[in-house]
Amino acid sequence: MSESWSESEVEAAVEDYFNMLRLELAGCNYNKTEHRRTLMGHLNNRSEGSIELKHQNISAVLIEMGIPYIDGYKPRSNYQRVLLPAAVADYLKNNPDLQDLFKRDVETMPEIPSVDDFLAIMETPPVQDDKSPSGVADTPEIYNPVGVNYLEREAQNQALGGAGEHFVINFERARLIHAGRESLADRIEQVSATVGPSAGFDIRSFEANGSDRFIEAKTTKYGKNTPFFVTPNELRFSRDNASQYFLYRIFRFRAGPRIFALHGHLQDRCMLVPSQYMARPA
Image 1 (cartoon, rainbow, N blue to C red):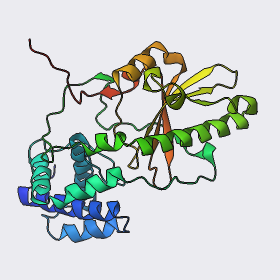
Image 2 (tube, helix red, strand yellow):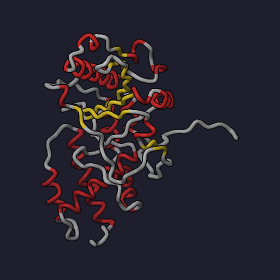
Image 3 (cartoon, one colour):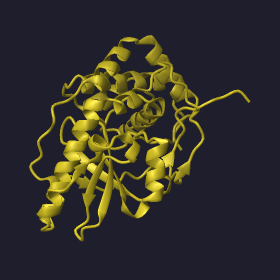
């Protein structure tokens, strides 16, 4: 077993990660391999694989803090539970300029991307490395020194959400036309616009046999593992209409958008983590 990472090594990895994240959010090209090899010179005989795993651990910490992460580093949750979050928190506190970068990025509406083949953009849902069961989890214990959940703020971007819904409508039209049901494609309804949030879902589409398909669309500019946010009403609707309910997660929306779908009651398909509480005096 390799020796545990020292505090200075973790700090060096965190700094390198944020240097790459700055470039990614600014739309600049960079080479992850070059970064890893340069970082090796500041570490205690660490392999490239070990460094990549540490960067994946940092992605997991940032997601738990509600902060954008590097898409190319899939989050891995098997990290030092004290040392790594503390190093990330210290870096964020010592580099307040990152808050402006995060705020600007989550509030910016990207151009609606074009897609050559809608039917080719559907993927399987992500598989979590920690094998977490579905259901309701405890509130996360990681401290966010920034005090803002930027992933939640992005989820509240109505322009982004609306663009994602239109993207899903185009996907559904392509799916139904491919199935020879163009007449059904013409009847797809953006329920979020005609009814509003009380409906509990965004889009009414159809199966090839004409039965209803109820779709909730969740859109992010970030990677496949970015968590999404659901309301109690959306959760209830997914429970009461499980056989006809689909959540479409649209990710990487600013460039090369992809979709994965979750079918059924969301509590059976997701780990639900409380993000806020309604309180009253006891």
